[in-house]
Amino acid sequence: MKLRTKVQMFLSALILLFMLLMHTIVYLLYQNQVSEKEINRVRDDTLNVMEAIVQNNGGEIENQQLLQAFLPNNGLIRIIDADEQVIHDVSKQSSYYDWPFHYTQSEEIRLNKTEDGIPYVQVAMPIIWEDGSIVTLQVNEALYAMEDTLSTLQIVLMATAALMVIPAIIAGTLLAGYVTKPIQRLTKEMKSNPKDGTWDKLDIPSKSHDEINQMQHAYNEMIERIEENIRKQEQFVSDASHELKTPLSVISGYANLLKRRGKEKPGLLEEATQSILSETNRMQQLTEQMLMLARNEDKENLTYERFELRALIKEVIRSLSIAYDRNISFYDETDHHEIISADRAKLQQAIYILIDNACKYSDDRVIVSLIENNYSYDIQVQDFGEGLSESDQKQIFQRFYRVDKSRSRKAGGTGLGLAICTSIVRAHNGKLSVDSRIEEGSTFTISLPK
Ligand SMILES: Nc1ncnc2c1ncn2[C@@H]1O[C@H](COP(=O)(O)OP(=O)(O)OP(=O)(O)O)[C@@H](O)[C@H]1O
Ligand SMILES: [Mg+2]
Image (cartoon, rainbow, N blue to C red; front, top):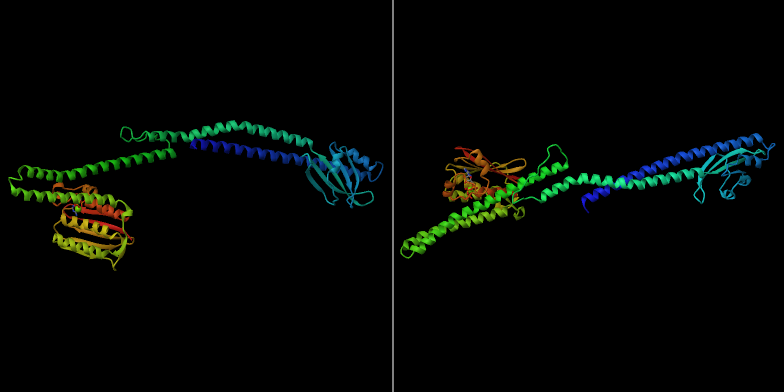
């Protein structure tokens, strides 16, 4: 069911329900007021009859006649003694004699209904009879007028309720339209995006600050993120193909050379195979790194195990200090041997990438520290090399970004190391940050939550 129909139905039902409630309240209040008035009237009549009986006191007028004189048109008057026997009863309607009675010594007022649903009032009062005994005087009256008025009121109220159905539906429809129209417009605009391959942002009227406006803002922000992601993806593909192009052209160049001159110059064979091998190695490394990047994005790819963090760092330091023949110092500032739970191989790779960079981009010493904070373990890798400018610091974590392309190429870099390191650290819910100054050196920090 459409939202518009739902809102429309809900609002119409709500309006009708509210109206029915109001009508019921009006009806009940009116019924209460009218019946109270009628009861008071019959009570006054009863008091009059009582006074007349007391004044007559078995005198000149026959009690039966006296009661007859006070008998209301649609009523019944009874005198009941202590043995529940009727001493006198007068009425113009024989059916009224069926109305119930009983002896009572206190005032009683009741509003009953006949079998036909006609309401009648019964007022009972004790009086002293001629013989000195206490009897009950009961005055009853059927309330035809009240019944008529109430049923007329009922019909009027029901008719207005029925008539109100149409305006309620119209009001519901109008309100539903008012609420859902901006949503429909937004949906239409969203559906027509992207137009000709470009993503359009929505024009947002600046005045309103309602929920629809917030939704439009959220949509525009989402478009910005999509565009940014698409741009990054395109950049990645173009960078990756560019990186692969260089070794491929070297390989095809040497292959062509071999084909043309291989037979004449046997010395060329050695040089060509050497170059082809080194370029294929480079390509292999590059594709492996790209695959790793794609996999690291996923948290599910982590294999958690428990191990000692300082032992892992020491292992990486040992192998890299041999490979680069450099002095790498290690400062463990934690007071006990920390066991952590993480993907050991991936974390080892992340630390490897940072120390590898420190060795590649500096000639002085390299310092690795392990620091324990309240909520995290920090692994810091500090070098005293050329350092990085503010703008480079922002970009080095992007894939394929290299500060000095020719120099890094010489050092064998592809610009994927820090991107891989970032994705590994992120998958562990950690943070990778850099603090660096030109000509002074850089400090890279991996922060792992405890
Ligand atoms: N410790 C450092 N000091 C100075 N520059 C650095 C340092 N670490 C990284 N960089 C700069 O950041 C760039 C990106 O580093 P990253 O590790 O991502 O790629 P790379 O080292 O060039 O290649 P590889 O993929 O082989 O690691 C480097 O090319 C280098 O210019
Ligand atoms: Mg690197």
